[in-house]
Length: 237
Image (cartoon, rainbow, N blue to C red):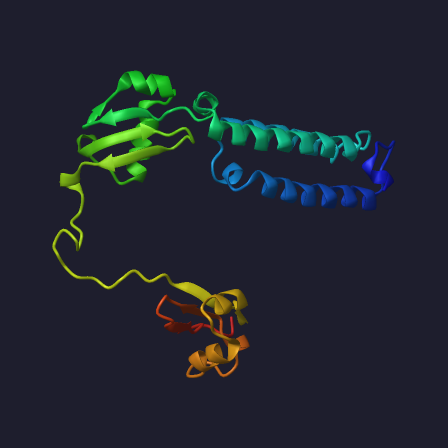
């Protein structure tokens, strides 16, 4: 375990051990911090991501730095991160500092230029985000707000929204989620257990196309337990 401490030089194997331990440690650290740190980089998340990257990167490139100190520092930062996240849920003032209120950029088709400056975004960036949402006419935007996570939420005026079956009083079939149950010949045992079925049931569903499950490239199942088998059009490629 000497490779955890500072050394005048490290062997190739010791560098590999450092990389493996750091990788596993970061996986565990990210899991402890939760999905929020991955899905959206807000103020606190950005600071933590930036700091952790520097702390772990240095021992992986400099043999004179020990890994133990970086691990200890990272653990302390994780504790502080979790504590700050919990505090933001209970203390509204601290929550407002970490997650400020959204800034309105467009209201009833009118750009609020003062708020553009407040959000520190340009008109070109605003129009770029509108194009991503397929908005061709800014006058059709009822509301657009700059979210704390760095994204723009855009709401089109109801009179310009497409008609839905509910608007036309047309009956539709209920929504059914389709999920892969066989991928590259490997059945999803957890999904089978969730729907209360077993491998024998799945084999019977794919028999008209494949005799062996392992030959099936892809099969999906919906909420009504309808299994659809996909056939590779070029099996030899």
